[in-house]
Image (tube, rainbow, N blue to C red; front, side, top):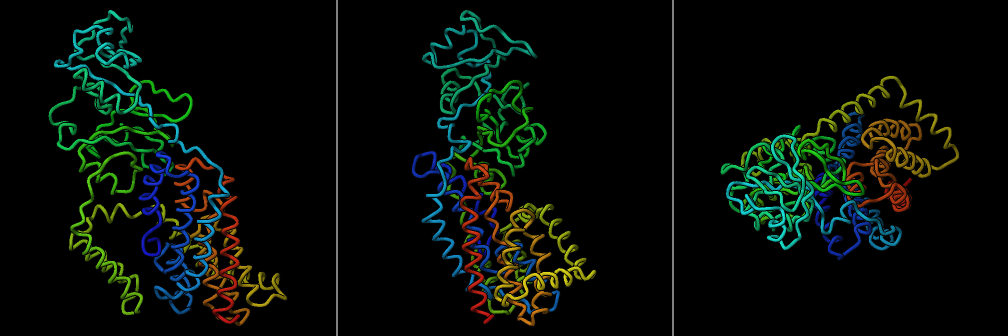
Length: 491
């Protein structure tokens, strides 16, 4: 999949499935998340559109006068070396990784803070706290009784509950819903605490479902409050409760004003269509909702358009850049995509990284910096055959991509690789591919690639886990590509 689709949505799609499997005891999260993430990086090496790094290297090399790589020009070395990498991820990595506890592991069942709103029709209105506890079989644990603005009522057994009271609870989602039904009350929308739930509220829609959303480091919720995001208005979902992982996880005050952080879990309710849209959007990590099957009526059209773009590019009939733009246009015309989907797929951060990286590469070429670095590298590698020089260049790229942006490493490395090849009088293609493959070996650190950070958070990994599993993979693929490029290009 990652040879043709961006890695990030693939990881976002698979993470909830694998986390749920781990929570059910089917597999250890630590043994499957890193292999899955690394496998998407390996697959992305196979085609020119597999990653933005590939597109940059191919584009910069073409601008410098080299023949432009077609879609599958380097699929052979990628497939052979990638097979070795996949075997390593399957057979070795699960044995290297210790059993880690994901941030969500202690949440089975998860405990949430919530507000239960006593309405006029509630069976609890006019009842004592002792009666309410008896109605729920003594299970309900009330943290506080909030009445009016800032007033809290003592939790005495004889205290009488009134319409408008809000009971602050801490319990599992199942128990919270049970209390809501037993007392005829309403789990309160934390986005609109001062008003009762009205008929036009999203909760009145048909096909209601509960879902749990995890806040990750890359989530739009991270570091923000629900009020700041106007979450209810944007997604038309009601946030019922909040779970904070780890010790000291109690929530005080209005949940909508709590600044969310990585590991927090939000319990939400809404129409199944809204939850399905949220899950399809790929911006938030959705866990435990039972969502209707996605609409597949347009799927054959979308697959046909995608296959046509790939085939035309592979046969050299249409350049991939032109074909991709035409493909997106046809997707829009056939309503497989909306303009919102297109604009949501554009990342300002990625675009700025690419633009500044290209500017840095141009500066290296125009100032003679690339040629100077190439000459210096050739002097340092004197005595080595061209295959050894190529292998060393790939290793430098692999080290660089694990500490800085892989796009920056690729754009800087491509003009240097071409200059080195010209200094040696060797063909340009293998040296450019050395940069391309080396810049994709982002396995050794969590910060090496954005999907690594997603996995790092969801799996409860430590930095050392990436080093332990990623460094051998970097060395394995570096050695494999070094041999393959030397053989295929007769160096």
